[in-house]
Image 1 (cartoon, rainbow, N blue to C red):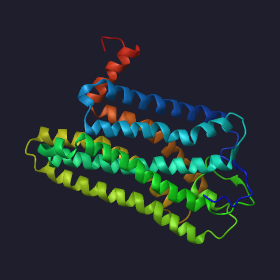
Image 2: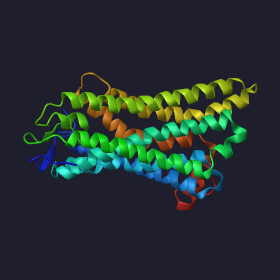
Image 3: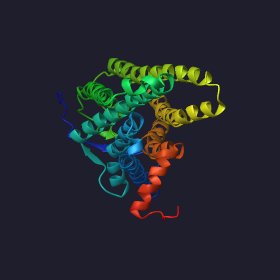
Image 4: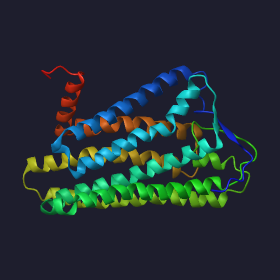
Length: 311
């Protein structure tokens, strides 16, 4: 990546209009971050410790939990660092890394939700062929494919952003380095790149969403063919958690990147929800709606001494 910049570091100004709220925000965001890490680690332990959960559905859920551990870790440690009164400066390389890993993990999750929708489609629409279609090899290829294409997308967006010269202002009016705020600091005409970035960032989640919509339209049709009300309820319950997580993941992307005009405060608020709250809620969504995960979680918590045996 060519660095034509004379800027060696940037200053993160943080969330707009939150002056004098640093201490409160530090406690709030630290709480979110800790719960996110603990919740997703418990999901990983619950799935790893239960042989019944060693299936494709939970394999992809494990990958989602790994992403949800690293995704908030891209921006949260630095944000907590300066909220606690330390320097707001971030190096040029650190800024590049933040932007790359944010979009790498975000794109990987987007592709992963699509794969999880396909998994539910095969399980409900082709139950007799499920084990053949979703073999260990197929799951490994799908899982590695999500990371590979996420890396390709992130590399393209990062190169697009940092090929520009940064030779003047270095104050980032945001709490981490992201494409819209970085383009404002570039010492060049960014109109064409903004259009390319808009199309690229918008096209990927839109394509994933359409594929997910296609899978779930087939799933709903198949469920409606089930004559048993109990069968329909069980089929819907296996998909409801995934649909909830999809809405929480895709709505912030549309609000931030697909609006014609940006509002820094609204963007920052939505990004905080996307970076911290959604990864924290995913373990709750998947555990509260799933009896097997809840049962395995209880066993893990018993073993760790957090729950008495009678529960």
